[in-house]
Amino acid sequence: MQDSGAEPTESLLRLLVITQGLWGERIAENIAAHAPSDWAVESWKAPRVLPPVIDDPEELVPSNLPSSDLILALGEVAGVAQLAPEIARKTGARAVIAPIDRNESLPPGLVAQLQGWLGELGVASVFPKPFCSLTETSCNRTPLVATYDDPTIRRFARQFGRPQFRASVEGQHIRHLEVIRDAACGCARHVAEGLAGCHVDRAVEAAGMLHHHFPCLASMNKDPDYLDTLMHVSGHFLQDAVKEEIRACLTPVAYLRPSNLADQEPA
Image (cartoon, rainbow, N blue to C red; front, side):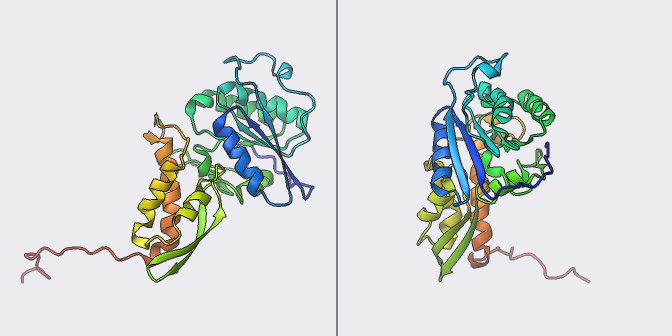
């Protein structure tokens, strides 16, 4: 990951979200609705049709985009990611987050190119795969875990990325599930609302169903790195976050002891 190393000098975080379709628009709407008061969230809809290879990105990027600290590139096709360096140059952005919820929108080869192009501009970058793997220090899942150290990205990741909860349990039921960090799409908030009143022993499974029916828009194609679909990887992150919060309240698993198992070895 490319790191800028410089601490933000302004109290206001200026975020520019680049969208191209339903996936990105839903994320942009959730972030705008739930961003902290010291964020300014703007968006720009990129052209729906872009060539697979963009020779002159300057022609496609408006000159009047707002000054920004952080770019969130949410393209449906690879062309949008190719515009990210030019957008960063025109807006003065210090960092770019380009999530990968579909490999078709950001293939591995393009990720490597983007890191190089943005690095030449002194712009930090991360490519969380899927988006809800992003934390304040890392992203992705084994075997692709990648760390970063950039204050602008870290400030975003405190609010949006890998789901994190704080549970309040009464008896064996979840009374309230506070969202500490929401998924950028809003799924964690949706799951927290749906689990209110749920028995703790059913909560992890219920969280998976709520995630699936939100619906999660990550790819259902098998990912060659994870050997699983990105939708399933996303669901596991969310279920793990729920389980971590209610672990102490779960009914212990009963193990059967075979009747012919001796307590000790014969003399």
